[in-house]
Image 1 (cartoon, rainbow, N blue to C red):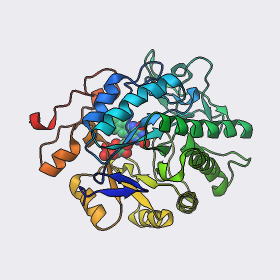
Image 2: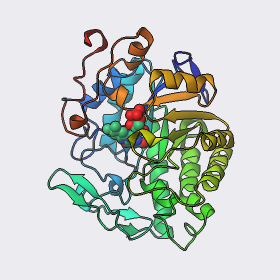
Image 3: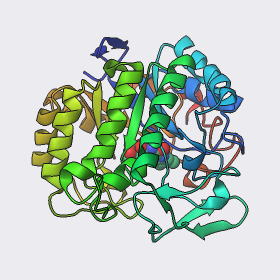
Image 4: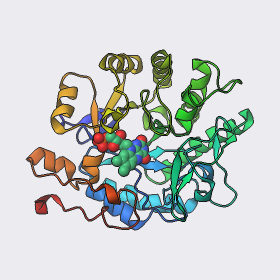
Length: 360
Ligand SMILES: Cc1cc2nc3c(=O)[nH]c(=O)nc-3n(C[C@H](O)[C@H](O)[C@H](O)COP(=O)(O)O)c2cc1C
């Protein structure tokens, strides 16, 4: 089933393999996509759908060095090379919109930008900087309700620029402790205004972003990634997480979103996402469901066969393997990922993984 075509809200995919979004820090220091990014994605464009690395909708959201943005024209032009290279190879490509929010250090942001979040409470963790190595996360500016409306507009604006840059759609990064999940998560969001204090209020920011993005580019071009049991960036489980996410999934479904992409980071040390909850979440959303996290070919195949997912996303295996789909289909050997070069600049560990036919 993995190699069967699939209709993603009207968008034909060549197969059911998805490249999971992965931050690789190969953009320029002013957050513009570079030519090697086009080469990297093109090498992996035999999967049906590529979801790009997290890409900021705002100068306030580029909290790591050399991650791309998509809020100015230079970035649109840079991304055009990526989308063309991927389309030429036959894959579809969605831009993951990631605002780092409080998972950030001010030295990583351009002049005039600021670290923001739901609360003026720093993430109790450090963040990498090129100049000074790991640094404690900055204390964010707590967004006011009026400022939240502007951030929502930034997401919608980036979605429009994504279409201009040739993307097939966007994925809202509602997972892994970035801005949207900072609002969703009760351990982080303790606001007492309209954006916190109840499950519905914590869901509000995600839903407003989804609604504005849908209005900007159409529901069939918008997906979302969620990690209800994630632990990354100091999120973690809390009482009521399941009913909150089930309601969120129902409301996202009502907006007509193309897909829900669930992160299961059990393979990376996060708590297990119970199978019974995944099934409820899938039912609550009711349309395309992407599974991800620690999957191998056999597990992915089994999930599709028992209809626990429609598409299967792979992260590290695709990172390390140009022509990943071809390798699986033809049972060719897989390269191992090299952790040391995940986030370093340049071609090493990026575009130089051995191609399928040379693999040993
Ligand atoms: C180097 C690296 C960067 C990542 N960056 C992102 C990201 O930008 N956005 C995101 O949603 N997940 C990100 N992830 C998580 C992956 O999308 C995926 O969920 C995770 O690697 C588990 O899947 P895997 O076992 O197939 O690798 C990243 C993972 C890795 C290894």
